[in-house]
Image (cartoon, rainbow, N blue to C red; front, side, top):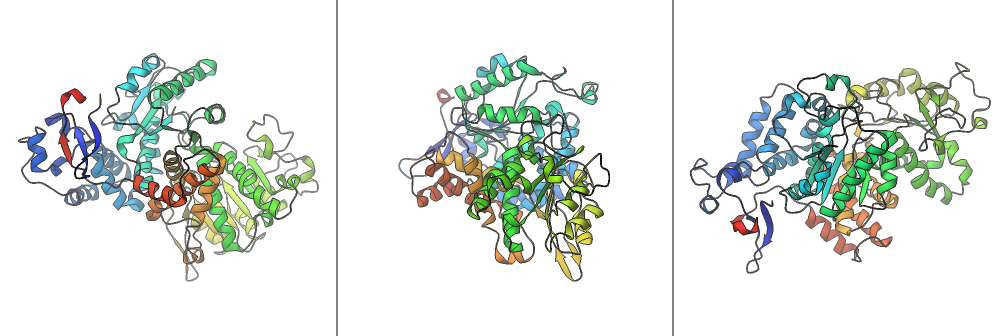
Length: 580
């Protein structure tokens, strides 16, 4: 049942919402509530007279009141709970506050605090948000989808909760991630909140802690696996295609062995992508592009070591090999057979080789032949560890997505620094407690020479009179713009080329003065402009590949910038109940 519609007055051109609910119901609807911001005319027309105090507050005044309350919170989890409660009361006000305090609040509404929140979500739950589909109700999927009160659904962020950040299987407590990703789509990308829908596919959990917790709110059965699981996913996708045919579907925090299968199975059938694989890879690639500019070197001059070959690691490796480096090295005359020699992938068991037992499909293209390690000097002949690889391969770039704290220790960092005047260190695991190293440890071990990026924010470090900074390699620089660009272009699919275009656009936004300070990506506060530029590049790429609307560059840019919603109170007019 729709609660409102987007309208334009044919006489004046005024944009307004035609609202179909009244009184207390309207005041309690987070998408429509203005709290004390309803005008006198709206209060009379919509049955609000007497339900609110007489003063009419601007959105700025209400935001000031919110910041006073926010400032009283004693820790980050309490701040998370407060912001989610604000989201549940008034979405426009929530996004106004978030957009005006992005650098301060993104670590609260998303990583690292969202990880702590997901660990306790059943205990801190205040109000349900989004949809929960289970094996027991998926048969009613059309009825569930048709009951969504939003006027249109352009974006769906969906998880099954099996691999939440580096925290593992959190069942339906993983819903905090789709909710957080929607927050970033709106605040960073500019999508309208009324068009975004978080969904949890609650197919059970194998987490004994949750199953034994009397307060756990999820589906209390072991996880659905095998063909029944994929049949469940198929019913979900078909339901999305029937009920929300224009929506972009973002797969989020699925287990590795399922994520790659789902991405390949559905990327040609529905407008979709996997941010953990493609978004992480594209953001990392963008930071590497900037690093090469700072170093004054080419990709062909580098040796890359990737620690952790899950979704993120495989996505990064694929972006390096199959997108930018492949194009760059071909242009530089390097044969294809040399490409693999430049990317070394390491798991807990050591360097991945072509005869390593149990190699998974995404890992096989990056497993090294035995001939590549002939003559290496090893600390333990039975295992080729990270330090062995960095030393013998003469690595210049190390990238960590292992979700294991401290693996980039002093010995590894010093060995890297011996190979390059400006070594590149990316410790991308989230939350901060899982980071492979800290900025301080990198600065100390490399004597301030390293270029550093991390998945979570680190405070600057002073070294011999110079301030060293950490670039936050946050997917929010890429995925909102990719989604926005694909939707504006009306593309039926999201391609690897669109991600590459987004990476180039993002790297191109880093200024010369920022590069001089060692920054590899823009400031978090510039993320809305970054999203716009990524979206424009993606829309142009879609058009040029024959997937998008046949509009000029200028027209596409105008559409992208017009599509970026900014939080404000839109005028309301009363609609007839027959429109409900």
